[in-house]
Amino acid sequence: MDVLPDTILEYLQNNVSDSLSPACLRVDADGCIETWSGAIDNYALAALSKGIDVASVIPAVVGLEQVELPVVFSLVNLSASSIVNLHVLPRREHEGFYVLLLDAQEEHDSMQRYQQKANEVQLLNTRLNKVLKQLRATQTELEQKKAEAEEASRLKSRFIASMSHEFRTPLTSILGYTEMLQKGMLDARQNFSATHAISSGAQHLMSLIDNVLDQARFEAGEMELNLETIDLVAVVADIQAMFQPLARQKGLDFIVEGNEELVCWVKTDGMRLRQLMINLCNNAVKYTDEGEVRLVYHCECYGDTGQFDFVVKDTGPGIAKEEQAAIFNAFHRVKSQSDKAGAGLGLAISRQILELMGGGLSLDSELGRGSEFTLTLPVELAVESPSSVTHAAKTAADLSHKTILLAEDNEDVVEVVELFLQSADYDVIVAETGQKAFELAMQHEPALVLMDMNMPIKDGYTATQELRAEGFKQPILALTASSSPQDRQRAIEAGCNSYLLKPIAMNELLAKVMEYVKSE
Ligand code: ADP
Image (cartoon, rainbow, N blue to C red; front, side):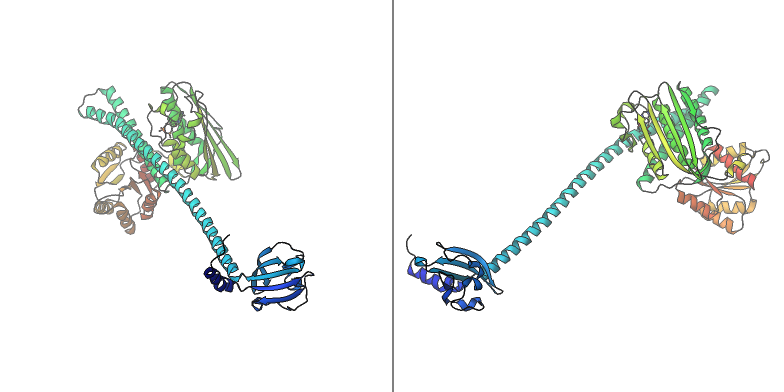
C-alpha cells in the first residue's frame, strides 16, 4: 500500500489524532507499568504510578502479558467519566506490551444518540403498526357496514316492490267491489261476498301497515310494551276461533293441545302476545297446502312467576337449514315461497317483540318435513282477573236512547260510526271541531263522548282538558290514529277514560261504548 501524502498525515495528526486524545502506558513482561505518555490526564486514572500492576488500573487488560498480536477493546468504561477504545499492542522481544487509550466518549455519545433514535424509530414503528392495524380493522368494519347497508338497501327496494304489490292487490279488489256496489251491479249474494272481500282486503292492508310501523319503531328503538292482565288460555281460544275456519277452508286440520282446564291469568302485553301468535299461525296456515296445523301450549307456574310455551307445528314445505337464520331478518322471504303474499316482516318483528318481552322464538324445520316454531315467554302471574270480565258480563238491554257525542272532523268516519251507534239504539250528536265538542258536551250532557284527538280549531286533547276543568264527569273515549304509547298516555292525562285506535273495528267500538256507558 502506498504511503499517504505528508499533508494528509499531518492533517490526520493535527485533527483526528488530537480529537482522540491518545495516551499510552508502557507495561513490562510481568504486567507492571513502566511509564506513560500522551494525554494520560484526560482519563482520570486513579492511583496511577510506575511499577504497579496495570490490571489494577485498567482491569480489561488482565491476562494479556503474553499477547502477540494487537487486541482491541471498544468502548471500555475506564472510569465514571471516561470511555475509551483500548488497544493492547505487543512490544518487541516479549518485553511486555503497550496499552493505547483513545478517547471514545464522543463515539459512545453518538452511538447512544443513534441507539436512542433507533429506539424512537422502533417505538414509532410500533405505533404506526398499531395505527395501521386499527385502520385495517376500521376498513374491514366499514366494508362490512357498506355490505350491510347495501343488503339493507337491496332488501328495502325489494320490500318497496313487494309492498307495492301487497298494497295494490287488496286495493284492486276493494276498489273494484266498491265500484260495483256503488253502481248497484250485484245481487244480494254477491253483495255479501263483495263486502266480505272488502273487509278482508282492508284488514290485510291494516296488518301490513301495522307491521311496517312496528319495524320502523324497532329501528328507531321506540317499541314499548303495554302490560295488562290477561287469561292465556282464553287468548289461545281466541286464536283457535280465528284460525280454525281459515285452516278448514284450505282443507287443513287445525288441532289445539294444551291444559285447557287451567285458568292462567298473567301480566303481559296482551296485544303483542296475540300479534305473535297470529303471525305464527298465519304463516303455518298460509304456507301449508295439505295436512295439519297443530298448536301445543303449556303454562308452567313457579310461585308468582311462570313460563308460557306456545308451539305451532305444520306439515308445510319446511325451511332449508341455510335459510333458517335469515327468515328472522326483516324483509327476507324464501324465494320458492314468494308466490304467497307477504312482506317478510312478521318473523323479524315477532322475534324482536319476544326479546323485548324477555322470551324467545326458535325454529325446528327440515325441507319437505314441515316447520315447528316455539315461542317461549316468561310471565308474571296475576292475582286478580281484570275488571273487563265484569264489564263483559254486562248486557246491552238497558242502554237504549242514551246520547253519545261524536267529535270527529272526517265525514266518512262520522257517517260509519253514527250508523253503527244508531243501529245499537244510541242517539248521536256530532261535532266537527274541538270547540264545538266542548260547547255541545256542556249543553247536552251526553252519556259519553267519542273524541277524535286530531281536529281543527281545537284538538281533542284541549277540548277534553277544558271539559274536565269545567267539571264534565261523563266518560270520554279518545279516537286516535296513533298507536304510540306516549300519545295514548297523553290522551289519558288530558282526561280521557280510554282510547280506541283507528281504524276502529265497529264491534270493538260498541263493546267499549257499552262498557263505559253501563259503568256510569
Ligand atoms: P311473510 O310470511 O310475510 O313473508 P315472515 O317474516 O312471517 O314474512 O316469514 C318470513 C319467511 O319465512 C316467509 O316469507 C317464508 O318464506 C318463511 N316461513 C315463515 N313461516 C313459514 C312456515 N310455517 N313454513 C314455511 N316457510 C315459512
